[in-house]
Image 1 (cartoon, rainbow, N blue to C red):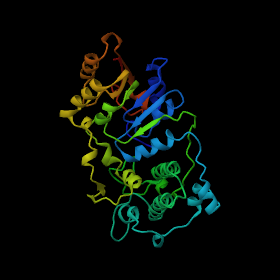
Image 2: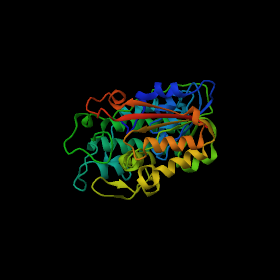
Image 3: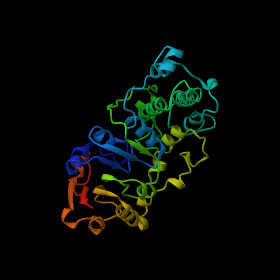
Length: 338
């Protein structure tokens, strides 16, 4: 999945910053759970994100320790649910209030072109079916998370966007016209069962957790995550929200991050670091972020052991494999022992 600030290409470097013989690692801004996936076998994880669709991904990729069996579903339909959903045909007649179809695909009443009509209908059908199967106890809670995560991953592959949902393309991208297809999740199952997943604001969660390593990867500019992923959030919640504007964005007042507000970002970081009951703190940040490198250094040294502080600058072009990136833009990786 394409995601703002994804750290997939930085995982080995993050790992090199983590001391040996550490057990509990917290990724407090989990996003697509890429950091958790990497450390799933080596650490007991605390994973968190304020966005609910991220929580669904966490529960599937980190919370499951064995492949869901879907025993009741298979007994009833004689098929694995992934295969069942991929083969079944659906139309507007099968749906009760098809929210995605009515609001995010082109029709007489809607000009938005996030999804083709066929894919929008299928998203609604699958999402409503998953909910109904849970209510009818045909699937259990873990199987529910698995199927929702598969749907979220599939949606990102056929959305008519550049990767985020703050706007849709006016001309249809070729991939957005391909049929929505669910896939079995690529989960590295392991027997560690004490991974904890949260869907909270980091500033409130930090008061109730403790461990060895705290990894902080906050937003670094004024671009809020919630409106950029509002459709994935709506598909995950499927709560028929009131939407507004050209892009049909849901209200996100309670999901705004202070890290995206210049007057509040530094205070928010200091609050997180000061309250952290973790021995090791690792922070990823962009060199052009709202908080300066010097300000971050001062905060970390204020609450940590100054002699352990280090900051490594990773050229953004190398980290992002992007030839067009500015030569002087870096990903900053900070460490301090508290």
